[in-house]
Length: 347
Image (cartoon, rainbow, N blue to C red; front, side, top):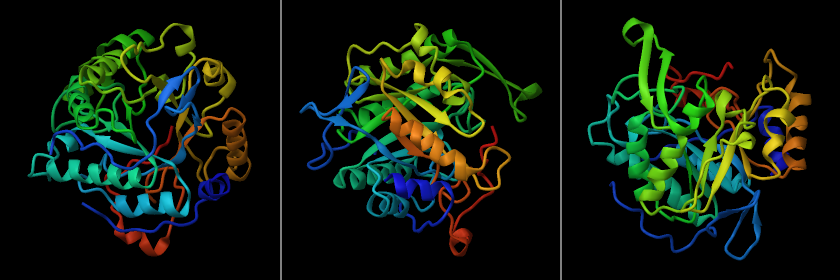
């Protein structure tokens, strides 16, 4: 897996083809063993230590039909040896609130089910990642925000009910929290952020906070492992070590999510500081040839050495050839993908 991912960081290859209910997903008859947090490790019911290594498969955050999701899943598992997939999602897509949807989100949810079933059958885990929200207004302001909103709680109520205790599914509460206090991150409050389409250029909404989203999932009877991103665009985890860890006495525990890119410095201060107590997933990691930061040929081995040294879980960003730090690219297939709604990461 390490050798393949090192090649990914430098940008090589992608195959492509696409695929396309509310209610609980039927229990899996085959699949990976359920996971739970024990100390700073993920373990199976038999006590074996599990380590997640894989990739992100983007597009369901911006495209309600997805773009080559199932084929990308096949490549990630069968050709590259991934045992974990991080699947970015949109709360508006789930509920059918995106302009092009006319089925209440049924096809969107069914595609997610296909991903989970296919991954589970191949002994692979799926992190359902709430990537895009809407600032509390259904069908508007759809995208990445500072924090989840009250509609995000509705999303997790539905998603946790649908995938409660599915052994292959982890719940990624929110993609990249940023620009709020530690108190608001954990306990909720009012969020104000700049937004070109909002009145006066400012969007204000209420966030339930990350603890509330944990509680919403547990209220559905879902004990699935939860993944929670820290502040500074899900990079900074030092607050977790300073009293802001999430409480979870009804489920299988919380993994903390950090996103590491070449511009994110001082890993020991912001990430290593929590590793003695909590499991950590590097939910996004990647670099781009030709970027303004450190040369990928030196940075990629360095970050992979750090991940391996600490036995971190990781899902590299991203298999889609237009999603920021591209892991793979095929010029002959680029015409199959739409780019207009993709905003590459520039932080």
